Length: 148
Image (cartoon, rainbow, N blue to C red; front, side, top):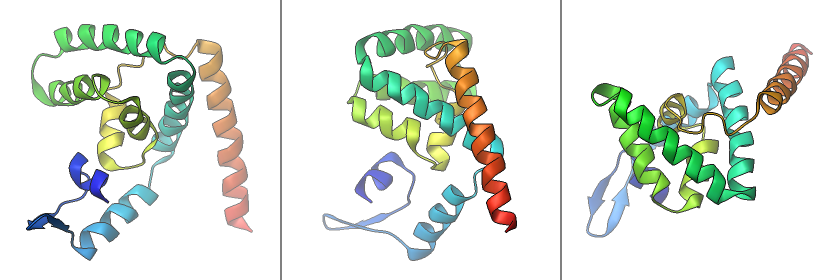
C-alpha cells in the first residue's frame, strides 16, 4: 500500500505519520487493474519478457534503456510524453526492483509508463514473436475457458 501511495497510484491523506486511503479508491484501483484491454495485456506480457532480461543482465539492459531514453527525450522535450520520460529517468536511476515493479504492474501509472518505454530493442524480434504467439495462445485458451 505504501508503494502504491508513494508512486501516486493510490490517493491518500496523512494523519501524523500514517497514510489514510479511502476504500472507494482502493476498490477503483483494483477494478481498473483487473480490466486491462487485450492490447494492454499483450503489452504486459512483453514487459514481463523485458523484466526477464533486466533480471539476467541488468547492466546491459539498463545501458540500452538509458541510451534510448536520451534519444526519446530529445525528440519529446515537452508535453505528456516528456512527463513520462522524466519518470523513466528517475526510475532508471533508482533501484532495479522499482523498474521491475513498473514493468510488471497492471496499474494505470505503469500502463502509461509502458506506453513510453525506453526498453525498445531489449527483446529481439524472435523473442517478441515468441511472446506474442504465447500470448495469443493463452488468450484464445482463456476465452474458451470463459465460454464454458
